[in-house]
Image 1: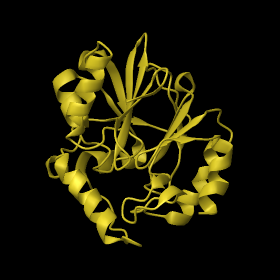
Image 2: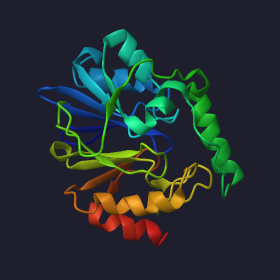
Image 3: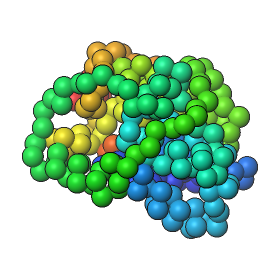
Length: 235
């Protein structure tokens, strides 16, 4: 789905990832679930392009619902997969601490797990090889994505700022739709390693210029990054 010039979303408000289309090629941010591979192919066809036009995939963190088709893309098309060094093991092995589920409602929770199963969540493959990145890196990829460390949801969570797309991609640093309660609006994301650190990290994007703040779960959010921290803390 096209959101704006250069900016496309794959998936929906349950699980989403993003495509940045430029004259120099395509950069992806996150890889959703394995079944989003078909969504990717449809979006590429609509652009008259193919997976061979993808120059890189940047992960906001290494959780299984963000690495879905990453290994397939790397293995079949040679696309490099970038992830913060502190989440590299997570992306390669799935090793992560158990976190409390927190508040839940039956129907939204079943909807999340049902959608995940429909997108082949149980067939997720970890990433065989990653390129490690760090806070402050500017990647030599279409759109010139800049990396902002956002530890909290995971140690290596990052935001990805792409001025060309007028967007900052925040992964699970926040959500605009809680997958376990169905509650809409900006709020902390579930399954977070360190909730207090995650809230503090929201201030790290406050100085960025963008009109879109794009989470991995929930609706795209049209706002200034400067407003994000206060809005989430008030939720």
